[in-house]
Length: 179
Image (tube, rainbow, N blue to C red; front, top):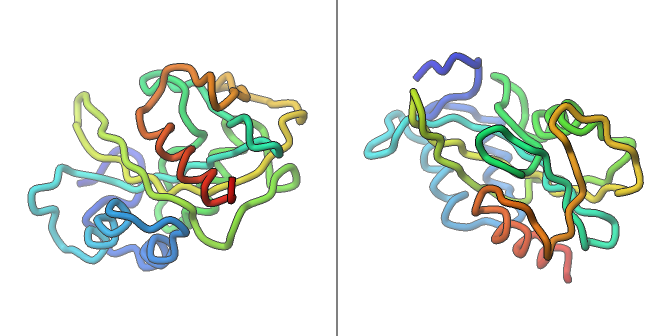
């Protein structure tokens, strides 16, 4: 499709991203659908799409999650567009650093593969689908946040307004952590 940002568009052959999606820790219908898109040469009944990465960062006691304030999404997980030929892991960690100031020295990445696939439809001038490859992390909620996105820790039971996929994602990821 050729979005203004040099991001991996769908359909498209992105072997490294396909391998990451194939190894997702919580496979489901969405991960299977993204795999089909990564194997396809056309969108057949799908609107244009591209791949993004997110970081789902829980506090050490798993009672809080780190969210950033997005201008159109509301309070959401740190994340954003991947650069072409960037792994989703590197993209999620890059976006996390840019949006919160947290780096790998201050968190534990859970697993060697992404944890979850989630999607969001963007409306506007060019309606399209964001396919998010989500990485699960545990962070220290006491580390100061340097943020241009108003990053804050929120109690999971008191989430502010934001994308609908957060609650389902949080529940699935906490189950992955054996809560």
